[in-house]
Amino acid sequence: MNTIHHPAFVTASGRAVTRLGQGTWHLAENHSRRESEIAALRRGIELDLNLIDTAEMYGGGRSEALIGEAIRGHAREDLYLVSKVYPHNAGRANIFKSCEASLKRLGTDYLDLYLLHWRGRVPLAETAECMEELVSRGLIRHWGVSNLDTDDMRELAAVPHGKNCVTDQVLYHLASRGIEYDLLPWLEVQGTTAMAYCPLAQYGDLQRGLIGNRGLTNVARRHHASAAQILLAFTLRHDFVIPIPKSSSPEHTEDNAGALAIHLTEEDLRELSQDFPAPTRKTWLDIV
Ligand code: NDP
Image 1 (cartoon, rainbow, N blue to C red):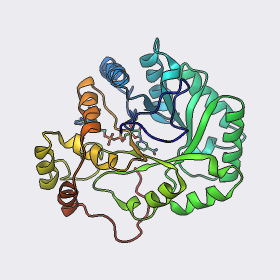
Image 2: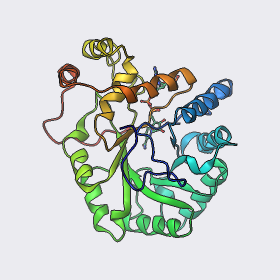
Image 3: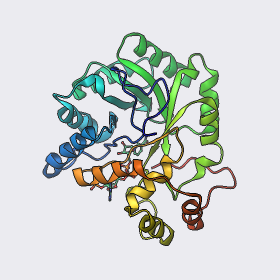
């Protein structure tokens, strides 16, 4: 099944969100790539990759503006736009202004999902209260968090409205599996969706030797797939996880979309785990 089964992951028009989203960090930073980046996002939308992830941080708002341009003319209610607020803006003093500025750059009047980018000094209870207010004002449909480990998630669940958090967006790829130990199982039990960022380990930049790894290469060969597709299929094996790879070209986006058709076998997983084993103890949440 290529869509996510969670009541919050449905577009305003009622379409389920596809389990593979589109990341946008570092887009809009080089003018000569702009056309290709916009074409990549549009190709993704054509392929029904309807969730697009951004943040007020990315390019100081330029990523949001680029998405605004890419989606112009497309039915807004069929898309699922996710943005994030800086921790220092995630309190009563700034969050409403931050959200409105993101909306303006995106050229829309609501976000489908608004995330606390990482935990800062603003109490989680204050952020949760403000997020609820944004929902009731109609500026956002749902809210969640990012880069929160299991203890933080437990703490959030205990504050008023904390259980309305619908996702935790965290780093997850084959070479960084720490969350499989406790965070992913906890999220699954709570019915909270996980979004996997850097699912391609920034195409190997975060882990030397990953792309040429023998196990990964063998599995890719067996499936007649690219290394990127196998990395994405690895995170897609959990049905409540949405990987959000970033692509700057229609070709990469098409390749990534192909991962939705790949189902890894036990044998594949054993081979992938040889050099990148599942965690056997708690490790701190990985971040970039
Ligand atoms: P990714 O793991 O998605 O890797 C992106 C890199 O992979 C780019 O260099 C891209 O190249 C390359 N690539 C994409 N598709 C392919 C392909 N099929 N074949 C070969 N190379 C490919 O890294 P990101 O850091 O971008 O993470 C994904 C998204 O997650 C971000 O864009 C952002 O939206 C989100 N994020 C959230 C964070 C948080 O704190 N919440 C932190 C980091 C990321 P090219 O650009 O040339 O296509």
